[in-house]
Image 1 (cartoon, rainbow, N blue to C red):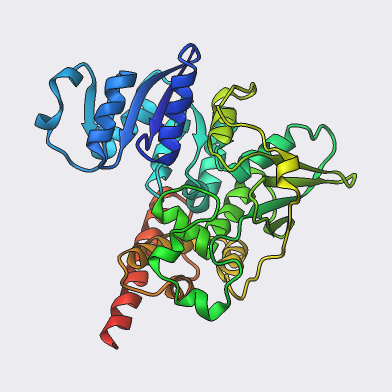
Image 2: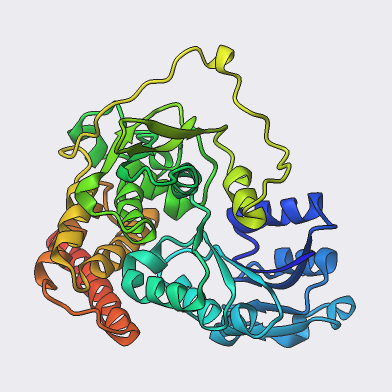
Length: 386
């Protein structure tokens, strides 16, 4: 039986991971759960899975803890994440927190010698060189949970001495794939949140619509697989059945196919190097009929160009990209800015903060704070002109 800690247990990834634990009670024991602010949902999870530690990163009154949950040690704030990541006897830590908030949890888990199941791409986007060095020292591979990176990882298991030449990173294209640039720039919140294939949280759904999510995934792939950005090609695949592929030096292309259901990549990471039943059926190729592939349009989706520019620039550019985007998406979700302003604000932040260093985690947090401040200042300037 493997012991697992889940950081972000009430979100989409966390709840699906718990579904797999529920399906395989003989294989997994949950020892720690954390959430941001969904305390009632967390209480229900604690009641069912009976972890040793649980925590909310938002502040809460300990008097709110129900009497029947007093067996569990509850924590709050950063202390909750650190304890769940590093202070239990969990062998695996699933980090499914959204945003840069997951970086410290990943580093804490690796420093404690834990196996990290990575569903937080921002940890590698902002601190890729620091995280991969810690993983190397821990002697444990980072096991990706993103469907695309899990697919690449699975394909690479068959490489042998056949060197990988290129990564084909698939993208659904989101809800605006067939829209023109002008229409995309005026898209509403309701339109951006209607993803054609996946059921995800609001932030990642908006990122999928803008393709900022794919920009972040290019950055993540660069560090996970030690692959230069010019050998990571984005391929728009509207059906979301081919989750990604790898081109090898002998001309072979290996791809991983599956239904658009995150329990498959989560289950692969949780059971690696084995496979477990996930409750997800295999795709029926006869019903699918055909699979299509397109080149992405970087005029309509500038996030892809900006992501590559950040990787080439080095330093804290990727951190600025991420922080400015998080703030811009939050403003869009509050319906304070139009959809087209997300990319504009990120590019302005990158222009103003070029050359920031990222030699340590303090540098990364400093760059993140500056990026958020610049992104928000652009919003205030824009509003003052209205």
